[in-house]
Length: 471
Ligand code: UD1
Ligand code: CA
Image (tube, rainbow, N blue to C red):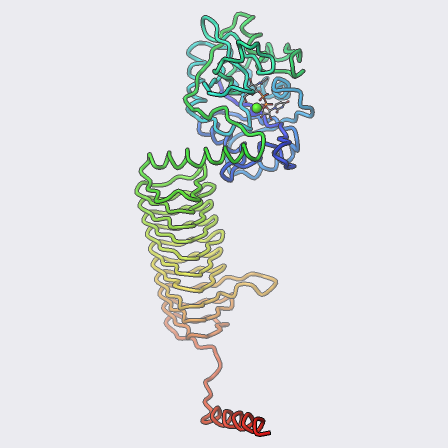
């Protein structure tokens, strides 16, 4: 028996004033849909069906771009006729997964969590329910469907616009998340009618239809106070960002992470941080970034989809799609562009850019250097101002620098080129030929000293100046 999920993602979100589907609006840099998918993946659900609508191809494009091995299909809802109608669009998915349970989630309620999903499923199975509604007790229930409790379990859900004054006072609300026994959902789904205040097919009507058929329905009260939260406009979206930001920082505080000041600190939903690590102000950790133990992530670092080892010290570093091994020290003002791999104990100093390169163990790149498309060995020393000249305007070439080499200040390495083990390059050289191991390469103009040349020039200039003033 499988546990599958349908995510409703058809909304436009007109008041967001964007041409994107609402579910692609970001919270902490990830689309709301991504938050929902993450919760499904953490809950280890089986197959996923996303119901798209407005600008549906953007949803497909997003799903294609994500890095995951989840089984996800999409179906199209051409006309927005209500949540029940949206689920009808997934009929084939439901029939293919008839033997099992189906979770229905709103793609624009990003804070659904795996404990709620699994807690509700447990209750659903334990009680043999046809439907288990996830509910939340809130101070202001305006706009939400109200949960009507019966003697045993659930009696129904009434939409805000259809409520009697007494029902309006109910503060237990429908989060928009439900577990259905799939075969039972199929039995009633096509019986719902749009005979209500909004003229829509309400998915919530399935609950009453099931109860009328003598099936069991229950409500699971989520401990997550934000479970039903969504946003209708940019102000609401900013509020979701603020909530998410402090929830995540709070979670990491509980895990022993030290924060000196949370101003500007944004930690993405899929980031992990090891114990003993300190995060300073302005730090932005994005995507699937992993930070090891006992690191110092200093001010203003932006780290995206990067794996950072333990004991690493970063200061004003931007790193994208890269790997930084244990005990590396980087910064200030360094950019690691995609596919950079900094091995153990390396030191990268100020104003250095590294791209698509490996920097070997213990190697030092102290200042003002560009290393692109290069394979650098261990214990190499870069003088100030080295440039790997990797691009001739047409093609890119690699530079190879072997262990213990010493690259003099202001060396240009014209790729493709190889510097052998322990070799030296003289400062200011533009190296165009491979340098064998242990050799010194000098490739620069010969020194020429012209005695008294400058003195004569100065005398001439001074005389000219004096003559012009005599006139
Ligand atoms: C729904 C519930 C309500 C609950 C609330 C929680 C119904 C009838 N009501 O109300 O009880 O308290 O969610 O937020 O279900 N969608 C589509 N196609 C449609 C309509 C909706 O894909 O035709 C999607 C939306 O994009 C959204 C989700 O379904 O992701 C919920 O729709 P929304 O219009 O927000 O439902 P509510 O009226 O708020
Ligand atoms: Ca809603």
